[in-house]
Length: 429
Length: 149
Image (cartoon, rainbow over all chains, first blue to last red; front, side):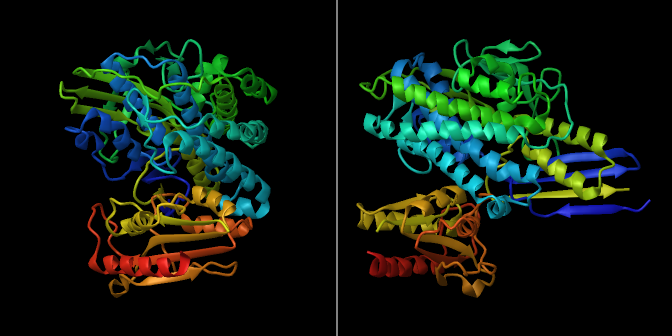
């Protein structure tokens, strides 16, 4: 049998450095590895010795797309040490800024990174050629998310306005009211987005996943909740490291996360949707039912619909928050910081983001642990690829390769930093 | 006329910081002007393109030959401008060049879009800027102040 090698040297719609090698011998997968060779960034190490108040601004730099999640997980960890509970308007403003981040991130992925796969385009530039109105709508929608983050985050990139205990300052009410009308337009555009994504062609591919997400008794989760799964997990976030473990694999610079049984699990919009459908706003539930997108959804390619439903929710929730906000609030609460260990876990656009910090009596960081959603999904991505190749081995080579790249993007992986390469190498023996 | 100046880069990637540093300096001189730092996320740039009549962008570009390091290229972007010989260093999958291509396709580019690209070679982790790029930084500051303020 002839050896065959296929290489894709540039996959433009994944952030970070990664590659995939598939080695098929006869009709069997001999080897399949999803490799991340992004250089380690040592954030956990260089947080050590810094003052706890600096942490949110440092962790925000880990990701240009979801800095708010990195800030919020660290802030919640610190507030847990200080034993303070943020309630009322400050808590609402935190939910509001999270809405902005979800809108920005989800719209970018739906329209510009993932949709080209479904529509048979190489990239979003080609979509713009045939369907300029779709891309224009996406840009407008995303911009509203940006506006919310900019307003509350204090500047256009690398937000700096959130702090342990609240915000450094709260913008004027009038600035938010200006956003309201546009948010109502955005909510309608997001509803259309759900209908549009639900009509895309999906490969038949269902799988028995363990979905893991936060769950809060009263609301769809952003910042708080218990960690739950569809297989009975129900723990406080401080129990995270007793239930999930990181494994080093020789071919990847990102650690693989596994559950207690050593198995992969699935975090992100589809996990949240499946585990928290009842907490979505009535409108978001209604549109899901309209397009027959009802949990449990076990086809990872349909994550794009979950992102769209969450965009509806984020717009709806942002409108509710702005309309009901009590603007006469002090931006933060005062507190004393004792020594101790704190845990934070929030729902970044791509899934749960876990932080743990140990703080000394001088307020200095003694140890830090950060587990981003992409590293938690990594093993699951690899497993999906394995199952997909097994099921669709006989697809024409180009089509199989296309679908494998699409399968990786189901998870919106943010391999992050530096250049962005995904080399795919098929070895057909 | 609405004008915005954008310095693009990563201040922890050696010469890639040059755009950010120029924006910072300009902001120091002209605190009331619309000048921002950007990490070069193309989608966000597109939103800016839609809202302004004139946008000036400063960014580092990859020099193919070491003797080109420190050279400055000024490009007035028009519908027919071709970018095939320009490489931008970007951590984003949708970078400045994609944003310009997309902006052309959607006909949403500002009336005037001017790029100042500083040819550079060192994009490794670090905060040191090459001597030649430092000189280019001064030169661009002069040009921008003379022509756009």
